[in-house]
Image (cartoon, one colour):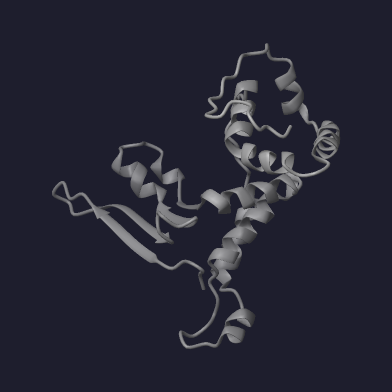
Amino acid sequence: MTRAAQVKHFVLNLTHGTGATTGETLYFGSPQSQTLLRIYDKRLELQSKGQENWQDYGTRWELESKKDRAQQCARALAMVDEADWKEFVIGLLRSYVDFRQISKDAEDEERYWAPVLEWYALLTEGFQKGRLAQETQVQTLQDAKRWVSDTLTPMLAVICATPGREEWLLNEIVRGISRWKDRHRNLLKQPPTRFHTSSAGGNAGSPC
């Protein structure tokens, strides 16, 4: 079962006289949709590139979120303890595509109560036991300001146009200090830099 409107299967063959398959990918969703699941054989990809340890890899599952869906996921992850991230992400995966023991003509209720196929249950349990790999990125104060400018400015403008705006905003800023982690404190240790933003209307009519 899947919420994806499209399911596509691509097989890439670069013969070089052998006719060997050099790539195989299954897509749930379209590149234009806000959620896309991409499943492909990493071994075939690396083998075709001549990487020596290609046999150490397997099938890769990539769940991609964009736009509003990505924002929703980010907000949800911010509220979840890091130790529970893997379980949360597996929940996202299984809410998007789930493999159950059902017939093609099964009713919705029957689909809901149908048991998950054993191989998929084992696979998703294995995902939860896996290591959560995070890319090490050094965030700068400039990056943080740019993120606020690009992402939060419209909503902040709405808040600033409502009664009680200054008191609410100040309370939230003070409350945010109690939620600081090491990555937030490290930003304060960086030397200050100038951050320029362009504005068509300057400060005219600014409610804050």
